[in-house]
Amino acid sequence: MSESLRTISPVDGSVYVERPLAGAAEINKVLDVARAAQAEWRNVPVATRQEILRKAVAAFVAKKDEIAAEISWQMGRPISQAGGEVNGFKERADYMIDIAPEALGDYNPGEKPGFNRFIRRDPLGVVAIIAPWNFPYLTAVNGVVPALMAGNAVVLKHSHQTPLCAERFADAFEAAGLPKGLFQYLHLSHADAEKLMGDIRVDFVNFTGSVPGGHAVQKAVGGKFIATGMELGGKDPAYLRSDVNIDHAVENVIDGAFFNSGQSCCGIERIYAHESVFDAFVEKAADLVSQYRLGSPIDTETNLGPMVRASSAAFVRGQIADAIRDGAKALIDPSKFAANKEGTPYLAPQVLINVDHSMRVMSEESFGPVVGIMKVTSDEEAIALMNDSEFGLTASIWTADEDAALSIGDRLQTGTVFMNRADYLDPALAWTGVKNSGRGCTLSKLGYESLTRPKSFHLRTKI
Image (cartoon, rainbow, N blue to C red; front, side, top):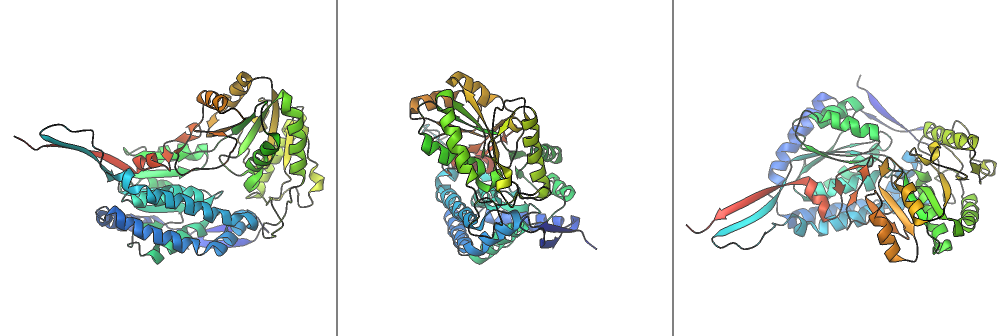
């Protein structure tokens, strides 16, 4: 009897999906098929790859309603918001497909009489992608589409919480006529996922997940000389300067903190507000959060769903309790949220003040519907606090002064600097992190560099 995965829906605790797990024989077969398919695909013109992948995107988007419902049942995002992930998938996929000819084109360093010199981008071979549940398509598409566009084959291992996402990818590629073997998925145990990554036939690993997971990836590939791309989370800060548009900031900062029940790697988890705007911001922020509607994500009136599992909610409850014990003040009354219940994934949102960096809620990644707000007196103080973290994925500055945002941004230890927005990936920009937020990048023209290797041609044409 083979092992199986069981997806427990946070909606009602039922088993939503059950699938057998693949083993060594399946891994071996999949990798052999992938390498054979990639040997032919690498010679297919980029324009032809574009045509096939555009058909795949269209086939995927055509299933938007079904996909949105599956997202809600698998990981708990409100059905009213889940369809937005399909829109984001299309935006990123379309952009990476569109820029492929330029990004993958030969680089000419300049004329040299008697020589033809250029650098060509060669595909790596087989790319293994390990994707998480929190934004199951948006995290995966960052690697899947550009890897295929670059001439690679892809093997996707998706989270046990969102296994249907891997199957939806496969359906779309089959509908588009992608040659067999170029995209495959495997439902795997952690141990077998490590075997997949460590196999000599895998040429690159793209991983999105936790810091311990990132260390496990490094260990798994340690016997080979291959690169990895890793996005490992964040504790992303927002800084409200004295010249901030408070109403705009309240709406967008709070959304950046609580969207997807705070389960976003680039969600806002720390807020620093200048003393001149602190009180006004706190009052309006608490008022907005108190209006959230926590409940079943299948209810179209819900705008705050459950966390992915009860243990995740318990972790955040612990952070909040510890902070209050150490002097923090909670501004939201959990009893106002009927669905909030200990021992379940349903957790009331919380806003904390009187917090500091000695508290876990301001230093550990929360990945839940809680945010702490600290008062600061200057840009200097804000910069020091924003950089006081093991993570560095994004940081946002809320101000009317673009020059100030640029100056502050230059001093921040982060992969992305936002001004007057947050929690968004522009596919034209490199998605990257520093410190324990990971390494490498996806999206943008630069995202193609990690999925290819440079090959130099130095041809003497006159003897």
